[in-house]
Image 1 (tube, rainbow over the protein chains, first blue to last red):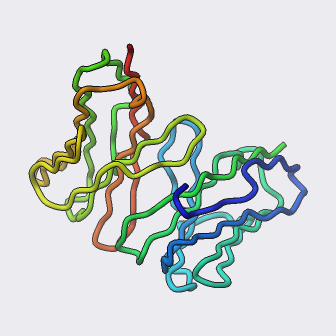
Image 2: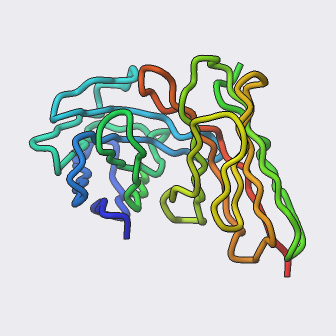
Length: 112
Length: 110
């Protein structure tokens, strides 16, 4: 157990659905991240939050919408996704943006 | 050109042998280097980090960094079947942006 908890672990959604992924960290960290991991491709950084402010958005489509209400919680709101968005979505946290990142177990997303 | 490049493998070694995993990176200003292990269906788990040129040892693991040649490697001594996993190399630059390689799949055969 890394101290970073993601729910749900698995999600199947249609292209017209709206769903949210949740991440909670119990490590007292100040920075949180969303990554996308597709088969045989490098981890892709999607969003970075530091002290609850978004500091990076790596040209992610607007159908992905992050929310960071406090330093312990991070959400990824999903709407009108495409089948190519099917992947493992990983949340990570670190003490600060320069620190070592610790990952949650991920949410396996399938878009039908 | 890929920012962080790893041989995808699979790399297969017999139990007890040394497994050598390599990674090259393109950003010469990179400052921090990490090796993560990822078992199938699980999240990445930090194995080692290294900031300075040279070797850093932790148990059966040794990370090696050569900034002039822009490569970082991970050696696993006395490989065990439980070491079978995908190993991800990650590189962080001055702007704290972490870039990952696609990973090398290691299989240790009993």
